[in-house]
Length: 453
Image 1 (cartoon, helix red, strand yellow):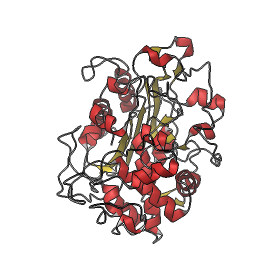
Image 2 (cartoon, rainbow, N blue to C red):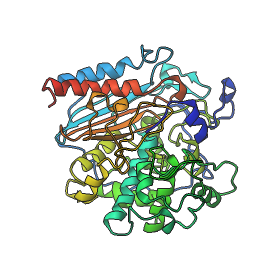
Image 3 (tube, rainbow, N blue to C red):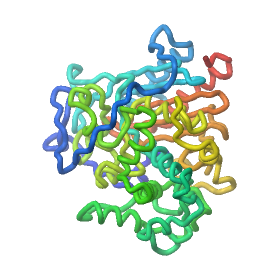
Image 4 (tube, one colour):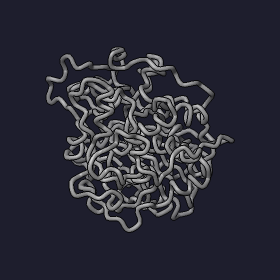
């Protein structure tokens, strides 16, 4: 789940600079001038192992004449939001988007519209010769879809008997202490019922150790009782990532490679893409986000400010990926935890992950007052605000603040990945939810008319 409101983004700590003053000294990066961040900000990591193309599905149609009719309608819908709309009348919803539809394990639509990079720091609109077109293999900052990956890594440890979902978190992480926190379980972190605040306060702390300790020390919201209310919390997944690291003995990026991306052959997925992309690939494929932050134009560097302060590797944000790689994760879950002979999770664990664990609980969400608390262990369930008419108790997925979403409709064996750069150049320009629902409704209409092939 992401947010469009100033309230939540202020809590999380955006750190934005305003006006044209951001042009000077803020690290503008265009297609013509590509520079890597300093080693102080982006320490090197080993590159992910390349193990062949991403195993999404058995068919690879073009985005043109070979697409089914609903594919052309989807392209028309995505193109509509490249300009101001009735839903977002003042600005385009995004500069560009990439999308993939898979049915019964076969890709039926793979397409891209608009630009991956359109604005420089400031923001200023770049001349056409300096823009970068969106591609179907463009690499996006997934933002909160990262939470799904962290959940998968935690559930792998449940599978192996190393983590008990019903156990208090403090049993694994003694630093997770404070009033009201001893009853918070691992399951509550995954279901967003822990009562923890939305974001962690890590500003001004001297080093990574102090920032990680501050995450664990985040208090329960005053008057909140853990397990009683759905209240979205990025902190919960930050804490969960530290639990994964404690159990595996690996840093989160290493655990992601070992537990997910390497087994599935996802060579375009990982934290800190500067460490596993060549300069030429980065210049051609990385999708820009904010162009007016205190860090200048963001491209290939995590948008979320707290994740950035945690070194770009965090449980709530920081994973970069493509539509194909995200679809592979959705297909793996749709298959009950397995993809192309590689088992990632046990079938019973996947069933538990995709079951609503918040039945009967109230939801508190100032950004979406009418939403329900329906949630599995790390995934959203039955949420029309981004699933449109595809929403059902058997539909799961997640969204990201940067304009990303994964949606899986189990009854129709449908995986839909929609990745946009709605935060480019300014995340406050548009609410991304209307375009998410509109795109999902194209597929719902195809199902209703028996056109989903």
